[in-house]
Every structure is written in C-alpha cells, then in structure tokens.
Amino acid sequence: MTDRSMNEPLLRHFPWRWVLFWLVVPNLALVLAWPLGGPPMGDTLLVSGCIALICSQAPWLWLRRACALVLTPAMLFVYVSRNFNVDYDQIANAPTYLTEAAPLRSSMFVGAACAALLSMAITWTQMPRVPRFTTPMNLMLGFLAVMGVMRFDAYATAATRGSYDVMAHGAVFNSAVDATAHQGVPVDRRNVVVILVESLGRPVSPVASALFEADWDRPEWRARYDVRSGEVPYFGATTSGEMRELCGRWKLDESVPFGPTECLPQRLHAAGYETTALHGFAGAMFDRKVWWAKAGFDHVAFGPDLKRAGAHACGGVFPGACDVDIPAQIASRLKQGGRPQMVYWVTLNSHLPVIADASLGTSDCRYGGAALAAESPLLCALFTVHHNLSEAITRMAMDPSLPPTDFLIVGDHMPPFFAREARMRFDPDHVPWILLRAKPAAKAGQGA
Picture 1 (cartoon, rainbow, N blue to C red):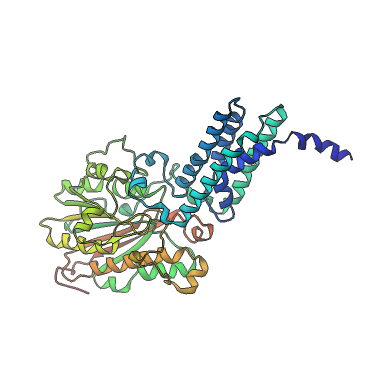
Picture 2 (picture 1 turned 90 degrees about the horizontal axis):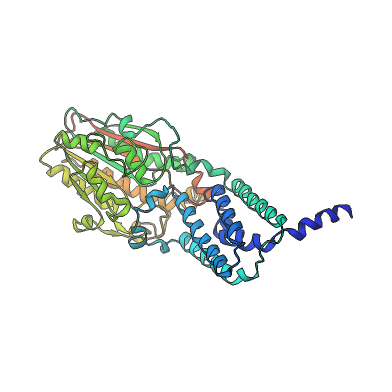
C-alpha cells in the first residue's frame, strides 16, 4: 500500500495526453523508424520538446494547433537532411528537389509523407482534448518525458551513429586528388578525368566486398594502365565530396570566394587545359551552374545538354541523363580536343534511394544473387547501377583510339541508406578511390 500511495501522485500528475499528442504524434515517422534505422535525432528532439512545452501552454487553441502542426514537417525536414548528410545551409541551394526530383517514386518517401500527414491530422483533431498544465509537477514530468524520448532515440540509433557526420571536426584533410599526386599539372600534359561516383562506399562485408573488387579492380585495366587504389575520409553530402576533390576544402561555402589557384580546374585552365564539368541532373541543384564556373570550368553540361548530345533519359527519384551514356561523350571530347583536357563528371543514377526502374536496369534486380540479397535486399539496385557504370567506364578507358588519359574514380560519400542493415555494410568513415594512370606506351591507336 505504501508504494502504491507514493506512485499515485506521479501517475495523477503525469501529462499522458501531452506526451502522446505533443511528443509522440509529431514525431510519428521517427518513432516508427526506430526498429529499422535512421539518423540520431536526440538534440533535435530536445529542442522540439522544449518548444512543445512552451507552445502547449498558450491560451489560444489556434496557436497550439499551429505550433503542433509545424513541428511535424520541421522534424521530418531535419530527419531527411541528416539521413543524407546534407548540411542545412545547402538546402537553400537545392530548389530542384521540389521541381526536378520525383521523391514520391520511392516507397520510403511515400511512407514518410503518409506518416507526416497522419501525424498532422491527429494533431489537428485531438489538440482540443489536450489540457494545459495545471501544476509545476506536470511541467517537470513533461520535461522528463522529453529526456526519455531522447535516450530511447540514442539507444535505437547507436549502431550507425558514426555514419552521420556532416562536419570534419578538426580531421586532417585528405583527398584522392592529393593521394594520387594529381593536384598539379601533369608533366607530360596528358588528359585528366575525375569521376565522382554518387554513393560509392567501401563495403565491409565479404559478399559486397567481392562484388566491389570485381567492378573496381579489373585485370584488363592493367594492360593499359598502372592501377592504384586507396581510401580517404569523407564528411557530408555530394557537394562536400566535390569540394574535397576539386578545391581542397571539406565543404562548399559560397560566401567564401575561391582563391585564384585554389581549385584544380583553375590550375589546369591556367596551364592551358580545356576544363569541362558534367552532371546528369539539373544545373540549379546545389547551385552547380554558378559555382562550377567560379571553380575554373570553361564548359559545364547538365542533364538536358547531355541528353541533347545523345544520352538516354533515366528515371528514378532523380531523373536525368543515363550515366552509362556519358563515358562515350567524354571519350569523344578527349579524342577531339585540340589541347589537353580536364573532364570532371559527377554521376547521378546511384543517388539513393535507387528504385526499381527499367531505365536503370533495376526493375527485376538479381545482381549479386541470393548471397547479396541475404545481406540486405536494398543492396542489389545500388550494386547493379555501379556495375553498369563500371562497365561503361571500362569501355571508355580501353578504347584503342583514346589518347593518354589518367582516370581518377572516387566516391563522394558512403551510401546513405536509411535501413540499418544496409548502412552497416559500408565503412562509415571512408570512401574508396581508384586511379587508372596511363602507361607511357598507351599512345592513341594502341589498345589492350
């Protein structure tokens, strides 16, 4: 009887309705995702919980409703940004998410949208039934509930916490360009092609590693190239990978102008190279059409340009030019260039989520067989797109009429899978690079 009498005041003062409709329902998508994966959200849950504690005491129902409704999309925005390691200041430079991308083609995004709409509907209808706090004990117990949700989030996301770093936090800088001594002008003025491969991570499981090696350490390359490989640390999303390899920075910050020789294309342009940058999506995405020119590229071409030049259209969440058609355009540019060429290409089709789509070759995905599927059903589509990309790059690199060219292939970031079982198959801290350095005997007209 004594224990029961001591617990009765806490049970009587505990704000059950507040916890349900101000803490759980606005974060329904996060809560439902805990068994599957997702980024750590503890700090954001603390902020939103404190905002909820304040807003829920407003005397006007309309204000309480409005505040609760805003919490759901705000939390989902942060959640998606963190899952893809996108820095918040880069979101403003990505208007094409809304105009060019097709997120509702992905079941993951559809599920998140449905959960958000359900959350907002419940909030709107049930908010009049949530009483305001009447005692300080209500407030204290509400804050303890916020702290409890934080702790549970930390527990649920602990396994993959280290793979969501956006900032370098004092890490020693390194890049594939530096590691392969390609930060300067080649002595023999050979062509240079840098390929930043979307979501090319370093697998850590045996099956995935074997498939990776088969695609990115091909024996036939050695007939014409000296082949090296390694890994470098990564932080953030694709633009951070671009800055790492092009300009020796950890992230893109357009408020800080590029120095006159800070970026690789600037240095090669000054040395007489013709510099070109390619990407199969829209040029407005992350403001590439603007900052690529500032970084030293003479020519830039995006999805519409590449399709006009002969590339097929590929679907998916980020529809654009098919990656497998771009190497032929690069080869043509290298063969016809009247002066040394630097070509920089950011691939597109392996941007997650990679969905089932005939144009991507993933509509009936069986690559890797049952062994890869056993590691995670999500891996097949990504590895299929990367395999097809490797085949296309190999056809370009082994073209007998191609002039001497160095190819540097490097990942931008690990595959930002939402599902824990897939995300844990990759090194959370490093991305791979592969260098194909043309042998001196590899003159135009000589093949494998």
